[in-house]
Image (cartoon, one colour):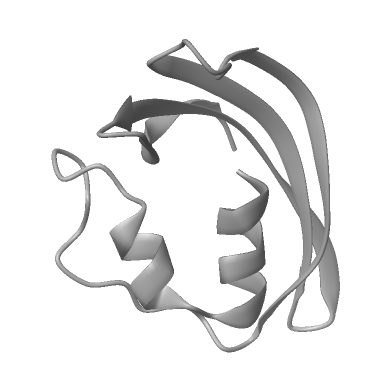
Length: 94
């Protein structure tokens, strides 16, 4: 999760697409250049351990857009395939 947040900060679309599960991955990703990510709070996790194949992360990602501060609150699902964690989807948040 933290590496994907960092990829959003750095606008590394290749990494984001590579770590997105093929079943839900978009064909391309166009990040808004006016969005500036300013902080990440991981609120809760489930699974995600060495022996797990699934996990969730509840987080708040803070950002500014057009000079206004806002926050993205999301519950993300991840799956591990071939030893690699992949973002699957969001189950809630805004």
